[in-house]
Image (cartoon, helix red, strand yellow):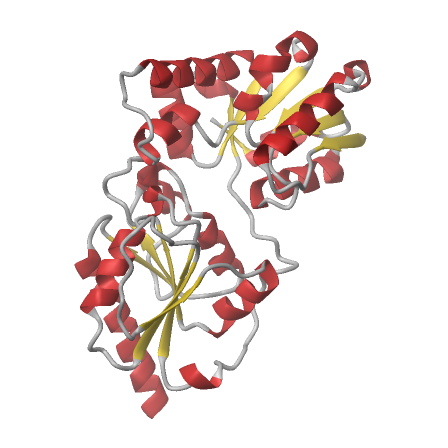
Length: 336
């Protein structure tokens, strides 16, 4: 597999068309657009901010139909390429196509979100679409080496056509800072977790940990994300739930927290072993101490030290122990 530096060489000085069906401020999309604008001779972006996914797709289709492809050297297809390439290969086939393939719809719907049975016809169709997208791409971009290897083994991707590009936090928003805790948390050791509450993240392990620490009176958890009915909440006094925060406010909560939970913690979704959670990059950019799931993907970038702690996937007991150790250090520092 090739690294990001090789990808940057391939797009430098090129006329670039960038396509994505995700809103342009999504962390992966904005990272790719910034790189294209930094290196490309010219860049046109076809991506829309509409909240409804169907609306964004239809707008991308309409704009792409009206676009003269001859004026571009390279087409970069971001999130989600499977919704674009199979439909528009007749228009894009003669161009160099760089596809950000960090999501397999087959893997996501069958094994991550468990919406389809593995050997069902819809699952086979999803796998076919993934394979077709890979086949029609000149190069693929993966978010980790471990994930890229999965695409090779499961979907037939060619290993020498894969670039590995790790995520990057938006440092205009996420940067180190010192903020005082709000009054209600002033004497609490704050443990923060945020996410979209997907199975791969293992939020159930976090909930088990919160329940097991109900009687540790000076440790308080802040959980940010749309839990709703997706998972059984810990209905204890040591946790505050927040459904959503804008990024700027989220950064403030991270800044005044003592410990951040990154994950992934699931041991039932294999994708947890192959991907690095986006929140880990954010915590790192802000200089925060964090707990990560002990996975091959996380080990690609992080090494255990005073700021990065690892716990076995699926093990709330280890997560509890890690939090208690860090809380004990906080108490000692406070009493010195």
